[in-house]
Length: 82
Image 1 (cartoon, rainbow, N blue to C red):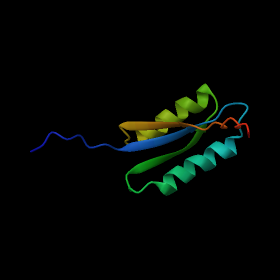
Image 2 (image 1 turned 90 degrees about the horizontal axis):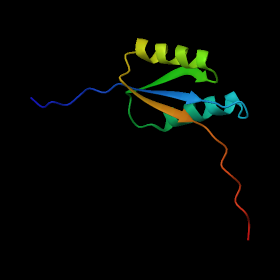
Image 3 (image 1 turned 90 degrees about the vertical axis):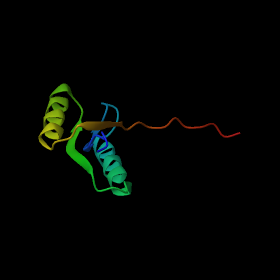
């Protein structure tokens, strides 16, 4: 028998003060929708504070996740046109 771990992956979105939480949440949902597998747990809590982070970690632990993607949505800098 192979020694291959069973991974249960979770994804959490993080939003900064200057970034709309709704945009971070929607981008997380877009990633989950584009994911080809069925083994990705989407944490419903978008993190904006330490309290949110503690709740999100508790949520993914409760869901049985043993690996985590933390998605930090940012605005890409505008490129200069030449």
